[in-house]
Length: 327
Image (tube, rainbow, N blue to C red):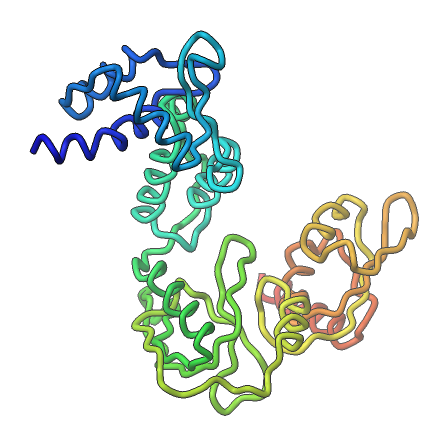
């Protein structure tokens, strides 16, 4: 046991520096000694502490400010190539807190891991952290394994089989298995708080997207993916979709209220063709999936006017007429 504790001394000291030191909280040798005793119930003499700190600095390349540097104490500096800044970790925490594709239980696990990467002073700032959202998170606890399996399949250029679930109302609301799919997976994409796999279904010619949180029982097959699909095909497909509705893109032109400008740039990118019309309106021309863009127009009906194609304009007019007829 004594040899075991001696070998663990360097880790005890390193963990204390990670957890309790920063530029505003320098530790004296006595502080490190006390924290090791408190956390691990191990007594370490000051010479051993100094020797292990030197080992961490000289042999293991940890950036540690010492008493010789500042005449005050010791603290561990972040490695810019490996350690997250507190703002970066906060962004990760917020992403998983508010994303609907991650079940709440998994979100909590990820957030806990993020907090374990921070010192106690950074975590103190998050003691009152709460999520201000009423979003309905996924219940599919297979989501993380799904991402891992799809990533492996893409890397090995293998097809996957999976069960795909959707909600149906007949007459009760149920999340039902709509059947097994076999696809060639090419990419994982993230849009509007959801994750999708871009793939080509067996027997089809066009790429499509599948919500990863709706997939269960993924099986990586021995079959190779369809090698006729190139990375450019995938890139063009993703750029042409809106809200991840998958089909072929078409040239669409609309007139938008100026209030939508930021939203349009966020969703369609600065590379979209945007032209000034007047102080209250701008025109937008994009190459996008028709079904997805139709839904975008319907969500912003009072601020978007379709110019072309005529088929899209007529489809929206038909939807509005049917709505008015049935209300």
